[in-house]
Length: 496
Image (cartoon, rainbow, N blue to C red; front, side, top):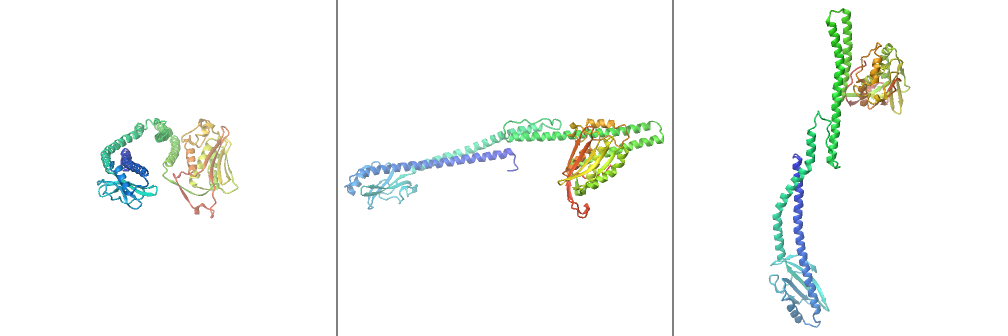
């Protein structure tokens, strides 16, 4: 049944439930009627015994056995009423026995029973219900057994059973119809939700399902679907924005390349002009290559198709390498670059290539937006954490831009103004794409680290990469340390 439609399953379950309830009702009705008939017969037998006790008490105490028999015959033979009656004294002599041969043989007592009402039992002629008791009259003790034919009760029970058997198929049919109707009614709201959900596609993801204030599972289902639609809408919006921004970022350098080449081909040029044009085209293609590599890295991050390998890494080494690599460029831009040495070893579990890339992004960002002053790379260790910080004296970041800083392609207004204010200087950077910090944030997340930023407009910025510290390898090298694999993209891009 698990492969059948839910409507069929509900119909069958309702049918089984109502059928079981109907059959239970039929059986209970028959048992209650049987019990009622037995109880009525017992009441009649008890009343007959009470009547007999009163009659015996009214008889003279000095009456002989024959006189008592005669009195009982005169009293009860004329109103037998279809009941069996046997009276025996303490000596075993019978005083009265019903003359109804259809019930029992005359003067033949019923099977011995314990005092009180006994269940119905069978005789050679029919089924009887009996009641026995002992009556004490003066010094005489009488054992009384009275019985009642159960023929009428049995006939009534059989008739009632036939009626119930005829009624049972109708009850089963009604149970099937009720199950079908209830299953349709129960699934009607689900069908309505499904119909509304089918109307939603990629062109109208802003539409939401109606929510009924019923506080039940259907309301919870609608709210869950609306939440899912909101996530899908956000994802589609991100994809659209990503595509649009990527197209825009790639269109600008391509237009520049096309313009330079077309101008160079319009008229004959000197070799020096062609060389300069080719150098500009080469610089633009390098910028495009870096942009495409960042896009590819982020796409791999979203797809979660590759892994990074974690092993003990010395952040002192990573920071020192970054300073050595960026010092010539910083000197060319008139910036002071300083490394603040840590007094304690700074070992973390990480992927050294990915961490180099993250530090390179922070360094490029600092160099790009710092016109004068300097840049400092430092390490801080406290309470099992190692923090690598990159501090600059650049243009800073507006407070309203900090919350969006790690979004893809996001570039604040102050940053764009900073680009224009620095455009007059001879710089080694093309216009930023807004992907670097997104990639740095992803690298931090894959290392279960925090990437924090503190900044004020005009007062510079400070980025902090906070990782969990680990013990230094015994051999002094990370080569012999155990590695851990974390799923995610492999960051293969080296320092710029």
